[in-house]
Image (cartoon, rainbow, N blue to C red):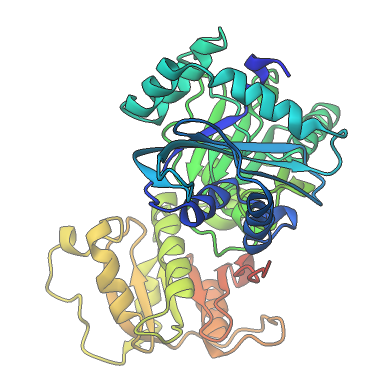
Length: 455
């Protein structure tokens, strides 16, 4: 195996484990094949069984535990560096400072694992080189040392191809790029937990507009690819297409998407493994949620206000309050007309405070909103994000809007108030955790919680 190819697939992590079993568990967790059908416990068991047969101690301070498993993938390698050393259970009590764990799928050719062992041994054969890795200040420095050893310096402006990118992600993204070009889609949207899980080598060869929706920040993966737009949406509890829908809302609010256009979306059941491609038509998508008409008695609702209210509703759906599920509603915009169809159930907790202290866009107000969400009634919010009331009972004129079965009085009130005003309403169901957005008496968006998967 080519050393340069090998180095480009090694993931480097810090090890704090003190014993061999703990170190193997930590490294197996970094590999994480759970979304590819290999449960964590099964992966650890395979490595432990192989180690019980014969420990792979190549040289002083360096070990290479590995396993061959029934997996459709290729191979994964993670290199763990321990500053204090790991007790690997060997007779002379010497400690191990570098552990390279690799997993090989049975689909690979016979004896491929021996090629990996030989290549890793060749890479790490120098005592001085291993000592440099042990003393390196951080994992990025270790990556630079490995690439330099292979004769390939790390570029400053290009993300490193990590072994954590599943093969199916590369295949699906390649097909989605072809589809986007074929149908002249205005953008390609990918939803992943981290930027590391996207096949950047492939994406950087494509010149179209790219939208990447993540649930975790990936500051160490930087790209200067033109026309790339990244949105951190820390809502891993949402169903796959709802993460994509929320990303489309963000992109639409930034005017990156035009109405009556197509977007190719690549999504997966979790945040790492992609498994489906869909085409979304954006017919009036932005106007349906944010509104396009401004009347004399209303002002345009700020997209940031809608997105902030959605974020709070999604967090309440995931977390609840004091261990109990919560249902609530935000009515945003056209506040004067809304209040004509409302009355207070409790003394208004926001009355008398300055506007700066009750702005929904202020992150410090989040906990206050979540606390008052336990009170029956709605929050009435101005189009610019100023919270006017909480615990407000809506009494709009009756509405002939027919809602889907299963929606209760909260959703009926949301539909009615938006049918008779220019407001937008966001309703959180206490029983299901579904977040529903109403505009002009109609449901324009639903965000549902993902069904937990059990590996």
